[in-house]
Length: 98
Image (cartoon, rainbow, N blue to C red):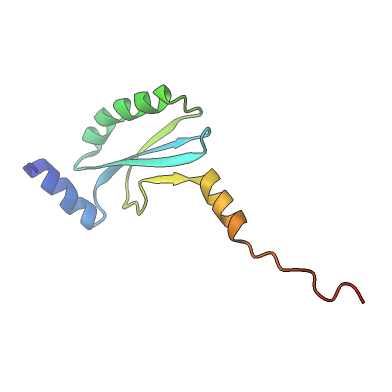
């Protein structure tokens, strides 16, 4: 680990690191790449991330460079919706007959 990596990690711990946030329509996801010590570093790195997603046939790609402290690196909204649906407890309709 070099000094730049250590500095980026320290900035991340205090919520001051820069991240590349990429949202896609298909699949409906948000991805975070980082941390970076500066917005310039994040901006330079975004090209490679976008190329990778395009190579995976992602559509509706939008990119933002921001200071944040993501908890998850990938948020799959379609998977989250499926998990939510599957977690809904379906109770029998007791008392409906007689």
